[in-house]
Image (cartoon, rainbow, N blue to C red; front, side, top):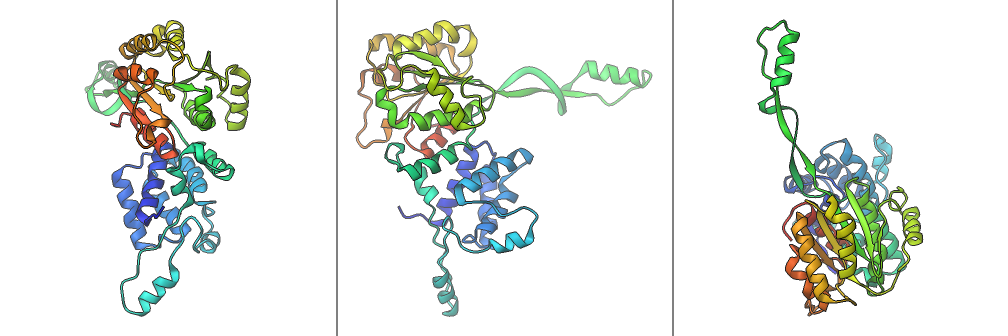
Length: 369
């Protein structure tokens, strides 16, 4: 897979967005322009250019450090000029065509763009089912940096703001504090809050090549605080508590002990009904973004699944289905369960690779698929 420098760098910016960094198009453009003036083949230049242009606040720095280390290798030491200077050499993550550059410069021609060969960028588009052991370890480090936030909604609560409507209570209190003298009106505005996200992860036998990566994705998502996670197979199991440890290995070990139906069959209709009866109807699915990560193979009655999907669609703000099989050439949703569910699905996306999971995170945040 041939990769040009902008493709690798834009891929890194997309991974940052999936990790929760607000690296919008304007910041990505500033990042690329900064590297035009620096050396994109040098890891430390990429590090500092990205740190200064892609991060908007202190919360972004930790995510940036973690993802840069997973994407390109250990980041240069902060505040250490000697360490930074020592790392200014081409690395495997960003490899320069140095000899060609010098030859073209001596010939008076235009120096070619550095040839960036990033194993991580190649890995982003590989099907998870076909990864080697080493690639799976690398994928796990990248998934650990993920975050998942639901689409933002405007709440009824208000907070002090510089712009907005007049807050009469705060304004009157301020006047009383000044002896009844007129004061500048105090303002407030409605607050924004991300919607709850509910993940239903299929752990049946047909999904076994993807189950580990999807549960790691769910573990990273559950750290946000407004995400609920269930596994579905022959039983429905709520695993939000099991995924609460910060260490992914400890969390997945707890899930393995709690889930009794690994690699079994799939009864999506019955289990979706159980979820709606016990949790969804009572409020968990109301106004939430519900994501089903499954290939759609159904052992039960497809008509039951269709009925329960209609129930879910009426309750949820948005229903998203991520199917790892969707990316395969010639795929069509012919499986009985998938065909029955699709009329009640708002977004039908792929779920076979890291890049597909990044796009899924963007859809959950409200982007169009």
